Length: 602
Ligand SMILES: [Zn+2]
Image (cartoon, rainbow, N blue to C red; front, side, top):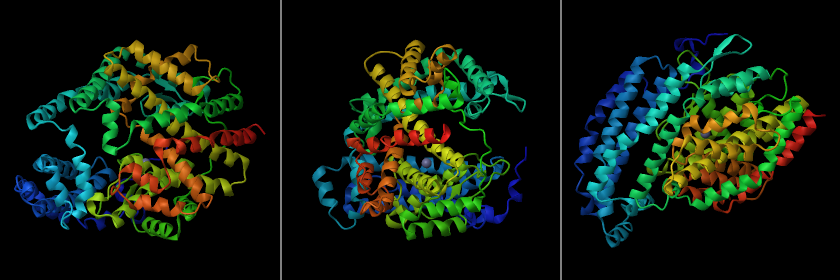
């Protein structure tokens, strides 16, 4: 195996250009010193909000100006840290910035209660004043929380309870990331002995060697099974904290409480579950095709990720990946493509792996910096799609930051995942159009259907499970290992279908709930499923040249948080409450599976 180079050996053109943020660490230190007084300056405004519209406007202006500087400092420190996680200097700068941001948040905590204290008629009159109109939408978002905010002593108690209540999540993290990995067995993977980890399980289940898949699966789940009573108690405790907080704040349910910040209704959640349930047969058909292609009977749950061909995958150079992505995004218009082209050429991206670099990929930056991309490009098709995905986030940031003031330049995850996956969809259609080799076409189709499986079906299955465990606690029940395993297993059977026969070794999949960190995040994963469904629908309409579809989509990107997420999505013609985008996206699946069947069984 090749060892990746040290950070200092990485050529300049392959690095992101963080010198644009601060040319030197000394200049960062200089700016950091200036922020020492921010908390005190802001705290001095406490008690002045109610004086006049001008006073409220001046306070908001100050707070947003401070945050802009803090964001910029944080981008430099965290992005530098991620270049080489073993570099203590940047760890230190990042943690100093994060303490300062926490201190600042505490110093400005007076803002909300003082806004809530203003009576409605005063606020209505103030919002018409020119100094406050730029902040009217933002203040409107804040005021939504008034009905769910308690008296100051009650709020103090809730704040004090936060840390002990986080104990369940911390204990889960310890067990899952530290204790369990120590006890996981090693297996033979063809290249020798490999110790199983949470991270390499999926990779091993993608192995072309069925014995490796079977051993990895049973090794992992045999160990997990021995922890399920502890893990059920932790999940039970965590869900009770969600129920406690939702009830304390006067929400009808945990689901309603967790959808509140995005202004999403429970109808969106229900529409997603209904649409995916109605379309399950398309995914079942895919698994039957997988069974026939692999020639195994019965198909086992550890075969679900097995590759359908054994040909060596094609490798892409980074330059080639950029050209493909840019060409694929042409339907979004020349301006979008030009902005991205110049960004990719001028230091947005940290391209390749080096020793100590953070793994995976993300899109970062802040209002006053490039929308940087951390990548670990490795020449695979997945890696090209990741570039398209992160470029979607970065272009979303660029457009929102250019078109909105600082306080509306952020956007909700619900909208963010639409921007990134739309790019992936455009890349898929572009590559499919120019690819004539049956093997490559099959691989592309497999890639997309794999995304449907992982993003739409699996996340919706999680979403259903999450809702049912919250409802059980809300009805006064409890989450025992037996209950969790039984209800999880019945969902797995529903979502996977009859290609599997679900006895023998497959039975162990009933314990999978015990290893999923997302169940501690409080209704989060559904956003991946709605995001992909919306993106499939948007890209289809843009590619078919539907009048106004491209412009509407670009307006959604430019909106930032100046409109609530569902309203921003409606600019792009997406009505998540109706469930239509989900149904439209899912209606394409049977055709894709059919096309794949013709290619692989030809
Ligand atoms: Zn993303």
